[in-house]
Length: 258
Image 1 (cartoon, rainbow, N blue to C red):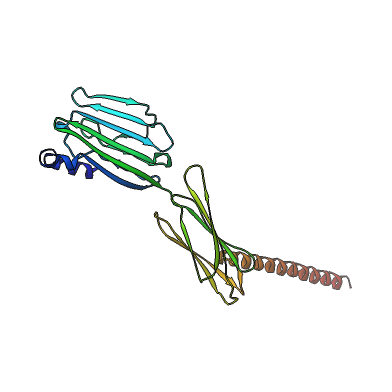
Image 2 (image 1 turned 90 degrees about the vertical axis):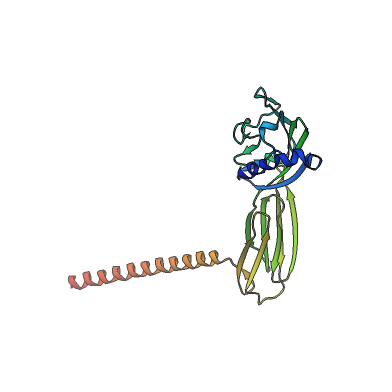
């Protein structure tokens, strides 16, 4: 929020020396889902403003309009139903808007227009909400593996190591997210590990599968198999021990009878 306030000191320069250049400013914002987003108006002190109007056009929704008349401190809203979009402070202190936890449906255009005695100023934000994908890597049959980047926005990119054949498909969802699925096949039998690299604006991720004689077995699966085998071995030893003690007790009881 300080970033918006710090520019107010330039308002005299904007209004007096460079009004034409300051009339309209457009920016593109990228924000990860759940983050706090501050939407700034043009750099001007509220003492120089007559009317502040926000035009909000969320993608796939009807446009919303919020206006604040400085002289009367009157606030008027038209077709605005999203209560998660609020004033950053109070409109007499700051005309900026705040979204505390941005969601997918906050994607859209946000335009702030300020009417002054010397003309109108406008600042427009094109907000894009980023969603990190859920990433999985699973082994398949016949030297194959499948890597998925599920429900990300925008679509993730998938790369493989070592070199091999792969087929990548994308599935778009109604909420704007995309699932990317890549099936990979390697030819060599001596490959010891397969790596899936997932690239996304919210962060990159690398997953790997350890291989056993050309058969894909994840490391956690190896530990599970080892645990199961040791458990079976323990049960067998327990049964053999029980049988041994039973037989020993039987022979002892027979000797006492004799």
